[in-house]
Structure formats: structure tokens, C-alpha cells
Image 1: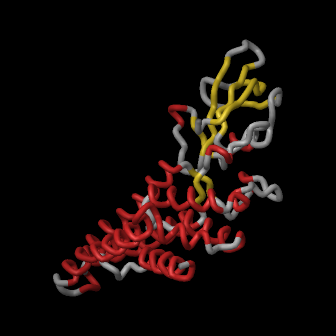
Image 2: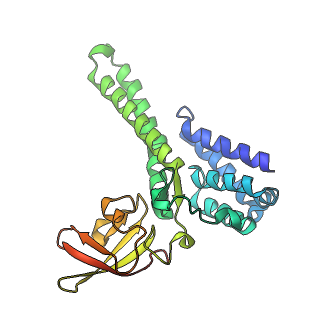
Length: 260
């Protein structure tokens, strides 16, 4: 069961990197894999998980979290089952703080879904349309003086580069879970309450994943320069805000999880 599951994830990752596979075939295969994994309340997957030791479970956790082709609901179900069977795999490592881990890009589940949709749109919509445009432009004659053909080829290169970058980022993505948010200091997933020193005005800032930035609602990526002042800090720590309209010296008054 474990070997079969490993092969399925391998193939699922490969088809997301193979631009020669047409969109319909990719969608069909993804659907079959997702249906197999979730069938009968994940019966086959549960059996495979029961056969894993902690080392194998840890490897599968990372693979499941980083496989683009899994629907969010299926990914969450697989992680939940893995967590129930091997809780030790989900104990946070203390060697490197999450915000300093260069191998991982932390994100909320909704932001991850949006990022995956961007990639799917490129692979399943824009790339096929671009290939069609290249073919149509090539049919017009002399390619050396065919501006439409040249433009379409440049667009193809751009889309391939963009897709490759997104795939690399998604391979390092990890969803922030409520239990990942620290309780004794500010971290990824924290909502922070600040008080300005000179007039006592209070401000709330939220620090989420790399694709969660929402400036209008004062939500910032944990990788932003602003966030670097806050990560790992506790109540009473002084910070300086240079946000327009909020400039000044502040102290951290409190914080809580933004995921609850």
C-alpha cells in the first residue's frame, strides 16, 4: 500500500510538470487519483498510513503538503489521518524558527488554493491558447518577419518560466495550522495589538503566509520587512511603524492566533 501510494504521488507530481499532457487528460487523472485516495473514507490511504514508521510518515507529510495536484479538501483529509496515526511527526522542530526556514514557504490554505489556481490557469488555459496562437501565426508564412509568431513564442517562454517558478514555490509550500501558531511570542499566524507611545492609539496587525498579504486589512507576509521586527517577540517589545498614517514608536500590547 505504501509503495502504491508513493507511485501515485510521483505520477501526480510529474503530470503537473509535463506541459505536453493536455488539460483534459491532466484533469481526468487528478480526479481518478483524488477519488481513489478519498474512497470509503480514505480506507486504502488509512491502511497505507498504518504500515508507515515515523520516518516514512514524515516524508509523506511533506509530499502530501507539496503535491499541487491534490485538491485542498483531499490534502487536508490525508494530513488529518496522518496526524492522528503519527502525532510525533507533527511536533514542531526547534532547531530553526519557522520564519527563518528558507526551505519552507508558509501559507494559509485559502492562499495556497489561489496560488494553485494561478498555476492551473497557466497550464490548462494560457499555455494551450498560446500553442494555438503559435500554430496560427506560423501558418501565415515567413517566420523571420512574422511579428505575431515572434510575440507568441516570447509569450510561450514567459509562461514556461512563470509556471516553473510557481511550481518551485508550491513545492516548498506548507499550510499554517492553528496549532503551529505560537502562544508565548509573535509568530506566523499571529494577530498583534500595538499601542503608540506618544498618544496611546491602538493598532492591530496580522502576520500570515507569503501569499496572504492584504494591506487594506493590515495583513502582512511573515517575510516582509515589517514582520521581521515582530517575529519571536513578546509583550512590551518596542517596534517602529513606518506605515502611512500610522508612523511612530509602538509597544506590543498583546497577541493571539489569527487562525481561530
